[in-house]
Image 1: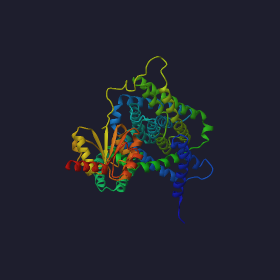
Image 2 (image 1 turned 180 degrees about the vertical axis):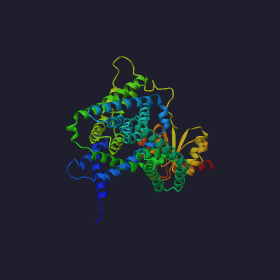
Image 3 (image 1 turned 90 degrees about the vertical axis):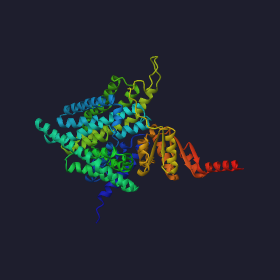
Image 4 (image 1 turned 135 degrees about the vertical axis):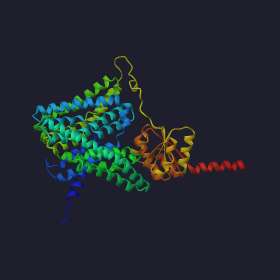
Length: 545
């Protein structure tokens, strides 16, 4: 008899996640809320179908690895450097205040110091997924306040990475302060050695291997390579260096993300990340005991106050103290008034180490469901507040008036996809005319000849939003699509509109039907090759008569 337990758990969990995710999305809420509710439904605390918790937990570990690998892939130091004067002190102060407040509440309810620290750190960090979705939905991702919020989040991500190193050390020597200090120093040393090894080996081994695989032009082999790197480094971290798989995956993503194959790797991992992160949130929901709401209402209320009042108030005060704009202050304050995947990663690790009680995880899940559900409403309220007319007779300052002297780097205003003969000629003539242009193509050999010309080049599939973002499409004014296939052109048009709804799309066509399709998919100008050749031939004929 075949054992279908893993298939039943996978199919059942994902099916319920699909239903609840669709319902919450239709209600204007984040799909993450639906995934956690789905986990509650298939969990042991509710009647009906119960998924295998041990199998779900193992698949959730893959979700953790891919989530942290994605964090490493998207970790760009330049984004933090742009806004470090606000993001670094702000994130450190806000995280510290929220963590201490969480620790204080936990201690008031009789929890240990270690449990309070884990609980406080979990309440201090916000969800990257939720914040990025809200910034995109509110069209703020490419603005200064969006950059500050992302930089703030990067510092919180680093805070989580440090916490992943600290927790095992705290669990090993909880009763002896000297032992704690020694264990913490040993853990930090292991993490430093691991990071140095991954960086040294990655830059000398992983990048050349990915280069060789990329030259085969096999999408499936490249995707498989990225997947093997993510899982392999995470396993190496856990089995050899005794650090968490999440920390190992972060460093693996950091190495791959800093290579020129980072954008394509990020795009290739999106489907896997989405599926397994859904399972991760489902497995978290399975841990939730709804009875905690009735048994610990004051603890839940205190945690909600930290997330909805303390964190936004501290962020608002710090941004104002540093003399930035009201729009930036509101964006940061509202955007970080939630918790999500990083809180669960810390909470689950705390439970596995025997530090955080089960009630702590229940409270974190309840706070996450409420805060993620309310966050879109807070953004709408903030937008309405910003749009209100001034009542004190003064004119509102422009958004950039309080910005620091260092402006964010804006990529070239024009991007081009497709490096066939036509694309290369366009790039060459733009270069001769002094027009800044970025070039996107999946062929590393085609891009190699452009690097010496000072052009911005991005290797990857231009139909993937992650690749287009890496090329600066969010800030670009125009994209020129010279790819030969109609299907590829349509996919690129869709992705470009998704990343930048205001971008002007210029494309080439080989027929009237193709021109019509491209106009349907958002192309503002379509150059018909047959029409252009016809006009050229007619001019030649006329000149010869």
